[in-house]
Image (cartoon, rainbow, N blue to C red):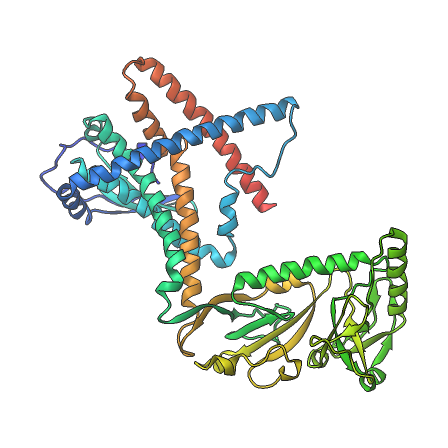
Length: 527
C-alpha cells in the first residue's frame, strides 16, 4: 500500500535499464522494517512487455473503475464534512449509526482467534495490489526497482519502487493505468473471492456434503454446551425444527429468543409458557418435587427443570377479559409447578393446545387419563432448547439409518439420534460453539478444511475491499493522491496553479475527514 512518494523517490535511471539494479539493503528501525526483493524484476518485466497489448486494455478498464471510485468517495467525504458542520451548528443530531466503513466489520469480526486470518489476508491483498502496479508499469515499459514487504509498527504491507523520472516521461493515460492498477486489482480480487465462496460447495462436493446438516467443530470448555456436545457431533434439529446449515441454527435461535421474550412479557407474573408440552404420567408427577414460583424465580435443583400444567389461553375481543384469562391461568400454573428431569421428559409424547383449549399431542389425540399435558416454565431471559444430535461415526450412505422417524418421540434416545435440553440464554449458547455446514463424505477426512477456506476467503474479500477503498480516497501518500493528480493534469484548459490548488484542497479535506472517521470507527469498535 505504498504511496506515491515511496515509489518515486529513488535515483534516476533509463526508461529501459540494460543491467541489473544494484543490490539493495533491507531497512530496519524501531518502528519500520522491510525486506526487498529483486528476483521478480526481470520475470514481471518480460511478462508485461510480452503481453503489453492485452494488459493495456485490461488496465484501461481499471482506469474507469478507479476514477468512478475516487469521484464517489470524494462526494462521500464532502457529505461527511457537511454533516459534521451541521452537527456542530446544532441543526441535526449526531448519528452514531453512520460509522464510516462500519459495514466492513460485519463480515470481518476481528477477534483474537481471527488475527492470523487478517494478517494473511492483508499480505495477500497488498501483494495483489502491488503486483497490479508492477504489471501495469511493465506493460508501459517501466521496470520496477524492487518489491518490498514491510512492517510499519504493527501493520504489514508491501510496495513496489519505480523511478520518478520514468513515470513523468510517460503519457498521461499510461500514468493513470499504472496508478489505478492497484485499486482495480483489489476490486477484481474481491470478485474472485465472492465467486469462490459461491462455488465452494460445488468445488468441495467430491469430499464434502453441503447443506445437509451442520457439524460441530469445537466446543470450548467454557461453553454451556460442554458436556453435552463434542467435536464432530451432527446437529439434526432444534425444538423439532430441522436444521440444514449453521445459518439456520443462528436464525432459529434468534426466533426462539424472541418467542421466549414475548411469552415472558405476555403474563404479568413473568411466568411464560410454550405452545407445546409433553404428556407426563401422573406417577412421575407424584414422584417429582413440588416447588413454588416467587419473584419470577423457581426453586428447583440445578439438574431439574420446572414444569407447569398446560394453560390454553384464549384471547377475547375485549382487552379486560383477555387480561383476566391470562392472570387466572398464571395464578393456577404457579400453584402446580413440579421439578422434573427435562432430558427424560423430552422422550415422552408431545401435546399442544388447539383452538378448543384441549391438550392434544401431535397426532391429534389427547393425553391419556393417566397423563397430564405439562409445559416447561419459561422465565424471563431463559429459553428452552431441545437439541437432537448424533455422532459422526453414525454417518453412512444409508440416510434412512441416520434419520429415523424424528416425528415419533419414542424413537428419540435410541440408535444414532440423541436428545438433550438446554435451559438458559440461547444467544450465548448458540455462539459458544463453532460449526460448519460441510459434512465429510469420509469419517476420517479433515473436517476443518471448508471452515478455514470460508474464513480466509471472507476475510480476504473484506480486507481487499478495504485496501481498494483506502487507496481510492483523496488522501496524502496513498494512490488516491496520484490518481487525482493525474486526472487533473488531463484538463489542459485549467491552469497549472488552479490544478494544484484543487489538488491540495481535496487532499487536505480528504485526509482530515478520513482520519476523523477512522478514529471514530476505531473508538466505537473498542467501546
